[in-house]
Length: 146
Ligand code: FES
Image (cartoon, rainbow, N blue to C red; front, top):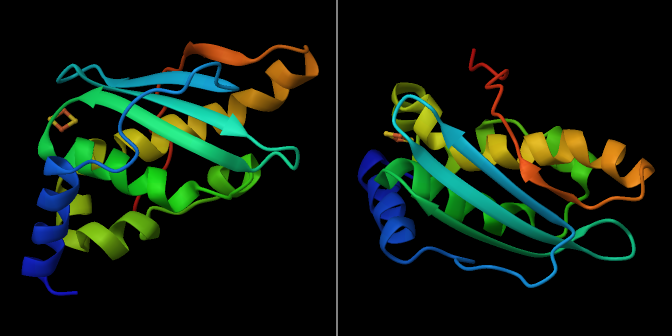
């Protein structure tokens, strides 16, 4: 994809977000946010009996790149396990958004994926306690691009 195609895809996801909305009785409900700008995303996930993502929805309010990134990642993680989500590289976003956008707008581009990664990290502890994961996640932004 060239730069124009990446921008077109970003705008398409922003104007027509995939998997936008909420889920009743999700196994995971997490909020992520970027304190610097106030942009927020909420992810709702339902897991199947094999602990794979059976359904996912998101809601959010933010810039074009953050909302497009959240929409893209909900498409990509369907069918994945939580450890697979935790292991995802930002390359999956670079493939769709382009390297320029992801590198220059890292916090925007990764709001959705980092919220999911936070959930994937936290969920095993909650599960061991017999609880669902219904809580805000504070984004660590621990991942870095080379
Ligand atoms: Fe806040 Fe993009 S300006 S996430």
